[in-house]
Length: 158
Image (cartoon, rainbow, N blue to C red; front, side, top):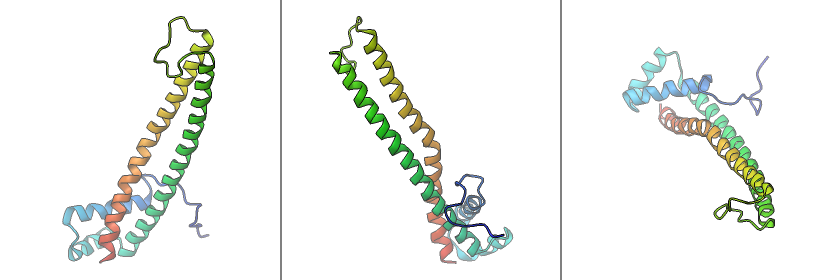
């Protein structure tokens, strides 16, 4: 049975075969430069063909774009939820006659306002956590995009 090669592809990761081929091809470029005469024997030694490298580049490029789009979608959805939550909580704090920013929060403010401020802090912490969680995958994708671009340029000329 042949595996479908549409959106059923698994997410991209450092252990992905396409990523490993791209990293190997990139390593060749960084070691010896973009010299086709030097690259061909090393490819043969590693039992890789130009076509395999270019297929890996295409696969990694496509799945990296999909992963970034998914990360962007999640971030946009969470950001919208966060903004709505902050707006609602700030309005409820203002309804109590308190400063929503907390800049002039008196020590004796009502318990409800204190609770609302803690909810506001939790909402801000949640969006910060999301950004921290996405930092690693985004850095991986950025590095992989740089490598696929360079490898694609060099190996297309072989």
